[in-house]
Length: 59
Image (cartoon, rainbow, N blue to C red; front, side, top):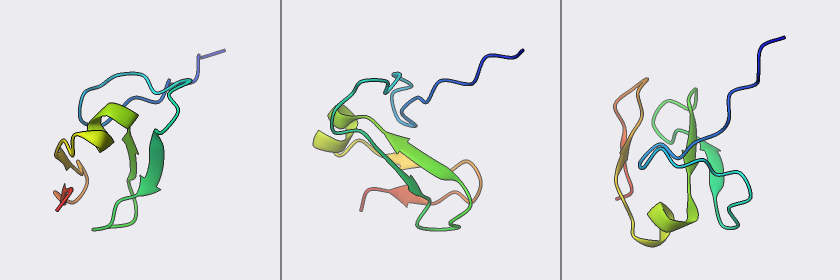
């Protein structure tokens, strides 16, 4: 059986397992891709880009 892919932050690629303050949400641009952010990248407002539609966040 294939191992389930571990969730990683879209910005820094850090695994978010047991990371209090991490979030998962649908892309604000297309709503089809799940954006995953670790607590550190959220705190420092590190940019991310949706690979599906090119939406850039935050701001």
